[in-house]
Every structure is written in structure tokens, then in C-alpha cells.
Length: 334
Image 1 (cartoon, rainbow, N blue to C red):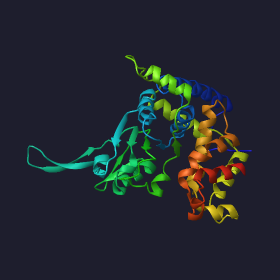
Image 2 (cartoon, one colour):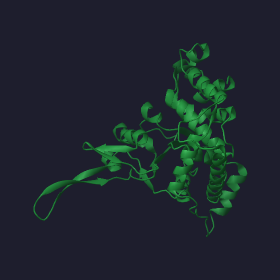
Image 3 (cartoon, helix red, strand yellow):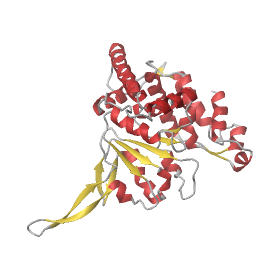
Image 4 (cartoon, rainbow, N blue to C red):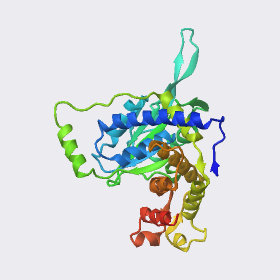
């Protein structure tokens, strides 16, 4: 038995044809990124899965791990209008959203005109997002969920597709503001970027310190990306995968009958986490050339989807436990 999103009906033959075309496009995107980003296959996979699922991602890693380079490369390869905002303590909401200015015409009549900010892009890079004040961080809240912003009472729709890829440095916390839980929940995934492996770092040394440096090339259009995102939402989800997602997400909440979870988890993920896991599992299946997600997809995506939507109790933190440990224990039970 499968659960299918209620869209216009698509025959199995058409679905297979569309999936084959999408897989060929995704393969070209992966090759295009691989010319510029060396190693980090898991990071590239999860970031692309987040974009294919139509969501936003939070990239967490120490400086120098090509977070900015990855976002720039994605913008070029996917053909998206990409812009970057460097978050600083003095950044104001109007610096992101835009503002209204008063103008006077030749007859002396005055009126307000809206000047759009950098958020009006298809791919927005929020660099070091935790360096801005909570007031400025909240400027992204409405846009990330509703895909429009409200300035001076007027609604302004954002381009389609619209994705936010934010970066965060986990080490230097002085002068930073932790992201509020409501905003963290709007990120489809938190992607932790680790140090590259030996061979990948060797290739980085050899290929990025010479005169010629590899450059990304465009292989996709925003319209084609939207088509692939729609296809992913039409993919069937087996009932066993739905049950696994529900079991995993609900077991991550205290008060559900799990004594260990009650002891270690202060608060857990809401229904948006279940939605995120379902979409990402579909996207990962297509990324791997499959027409339906499996429980292995749920296991593989549990950490990036759940870790920023949970908090541990003081007792668990005092014992040296991390959210990753809590998620790993829950995944074993699925």
C-alpha cells in the first residue's frame, strides 16, 4: 500500500519517463558541482536533496570548508538568481527585505515606492546568520514559510523557486545570537560540514593553487528545477515508510511512553519534521535513481532533519550526551 500526494493523475509509464529525465538532469548537476567542490559527497547530496525537496538548509561548519563556494556553485549550476547577505550585528531588517522611499513627480504629487532588498532572489545565501540580532533574523521567518514578505502592510511575493541556504560557524560564539527555535524549524535540514578526507584535500591543494581554477557551468534552469520538485511531490510513499517516519518523529518527543526519551529530551520535533522527512526521503530516492523512498532513506536523513528540531535536558547535556546521540538511538529503534 502506498500513500500518494493528491495531484493530477500521472500514469506509471509517464512517471518512469519523467523520473529518467530528472535523473539525467540530476546527474549533470552532480557532475557540474563535482568540478568545483572536491569530496564532501554527503554534504553535496544533502544540500541537493534539500533543494530538490523545495526547502531551505542550514550549513554548519568551521571556516574554510567551502560553504560559501558550495552555495555560489549551486546558484550557477542550477541557473538560479543567487544573492548573498553577510549577516552582521548592525544589519537591519530593511537591509534584507527592502524599504519604501518617498518620491515626488513633476506635478508635485508624493508617493511611496518599494525598493526590494536582496531577499528577492531565487537562492539566498545568509552568511553567518547567527551574527545578526534576533530582530533581523526574524525578517526571514515569513519568507521561508510563506514565500512572500510584508512591508508597510503591503504583500510582496518572492521569486519562484525560493531557497535560503544559511551558513553558521559552530566555534566562535562570542558576539553571536542563537537562532530561535521557530526559525530553526523552517530549515528543512541542518547539514554539518566536516573536514575533507585525505585524497579530497590533496586534490584541493593541487587544483586550487595554480593559475587556472575550475569554474562552474550552468546545466539547469529554474523552470526545470520546479518541474523536478513537482515530480518529487508526486512520488508514491510506501505505507511502511510513512509508519517509520511517524514512529521516529513521535518517539523523539518526551511524554510518548519512552522512558529514555523522557529522561534525555527536553522538547522534540513537531509535524513539520514529519513533512520534511517525507519530502527529503522522496528527493533522496530520486537522487539515487529510485521511484519510491525506503526506510533506509529515513534512517539516512534522520540526523540532518531532526537534530535542529530537538533539545536535550540539562541532565543529558551534563552527562556529555549530544543531540546526534539521541537521534542515533531513536534510529536504531526504527
